[in-house]
Amino acid sequence: MFDYDVCVIGAGAVGTATARELTRYRLSVCVIEKEEDVCSGTSKANSGIVHAGYDPEPGSMKARMNLRGAELIRKLSKNLDFSYRQNGALVLCFDEADRPGLDRLYERGLRNGVEGLEILTGEEVRKREPAVSGDVVAALWAPTSGVVCPFGMTFAFAENAAQNGAEFRFLTEVKGIEKAGEGYVLHTGGEDILARFVVNAAGVRSAEMHNAVSGNRLEITPRRGEYVLMDREVGGLVSSTIFQLPGKMGKGVLVAQTVHGNLLVGPNAVDVEDGEDTETTPEGTDEIKERARKSVPDIPYNRVITGFAGVRAHEKGGDFIIGEIPDAEGFFDAAGIESPGLTAAPAIGEYLAGLVAEKAGAERKEDFISSRRGIPQVAKLSPEERSALIAERPEYGRIICRCESISEGEIIDAIERNPGARSMDGIKRRVRQGMGRCQAGFCTPGAMDILAERLGIPVEKVTKNRPGSELLKW
Image 1 (cartoon, one colour):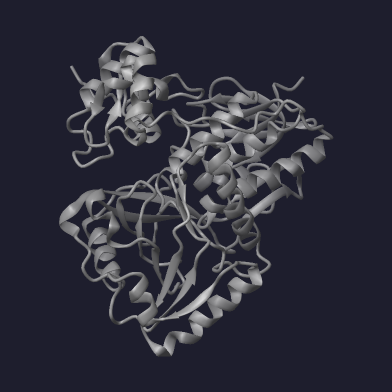
Image 2 (tube, rainbow, N blue to C red):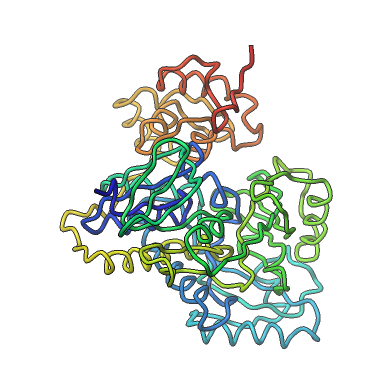
């Protein structure tokens, strides 16, 4: 007897998108995550760019999933109520000798089915984006590119999956996998979990999961990328996402206005041994700052509020590995998911869920819930809407985070959602408490008190993220 029809390993963007799509079918679904919350790995630290699809090689899985994923995100942002803006992207060329590379990118985009692509002159680029360097001689314009909140999208997938019956098991690390009859046993160091099918969406650990069941080994290299984030008061320096012509290590350093209005610069690309090595370095910060100046010379680095790093999973073949493993029936990979992985996530989920459902002979549900409402954002409400909300729920009138105007009501909602916040990072990623100019210097004590009260724990047991990261030490 199986505990679940399907276990998804990993609660990042791909894992939660797959879980949501699986709940369209008459299947019991479980998502296993080694951290304390959704969106705690690769998905938590990236550019938040919805790529148009001109970069992947035509015919690749990356190209297929990128284009479909961008299309789905535009629709899902409305149905699932997460932040998205279609702002377009420019790929800059600084030397006439490099124009063939820009033309190849344009032709590749056309072959991939990307709509609206244009080659602009340097003058046209600067008319659109006055802050861009005078050295730019041409650029590719991709109007279908956008920006999204990676946290908001991933939490939306997770909450909607839970609405439709998916179970989430946190602080549950898969330490071994064995074939067991027609299914698999997942050894977690505690309770073993028996599933008929497994979806491997384990990010930088995806090769480890794959190699536990297959003789055809995968090789994943953790690749760290660092970013610098500036205050929203300078976010309007650019409106489009500004790229440079891609190199062998990726799309290079970008300059972009995030969906929340901050100015973002990064990432670099450094191969590391430890898949959890998310430390920022003075050298990395200096590198991305200097490289970004090539695109936008007058970036106001005196308005930096924080820096961060993320690690993505680079597969040596350079493409996404998606589908059932030939020598491990019932085990499905979503491995090597690096850029444009965030964009591709809903398409990967749709594709994998379809494969699993077909293999299982599962029928579609008639009662699938396709929509979800996000947490009300007090700062974005009209005075009338705010007054009505506060009259119904007074806690929305008590501001805890001044920088982002986050209320007690929003923090309570973040905790009471399913799956809900169980740590300070969980609150931060759901409602942006602590993401403003003071970086939680003012609001941490208030948010800790609310979290402790709602979870029924002493305040000294409140953690930043997983157990062992308690903020107070006696």
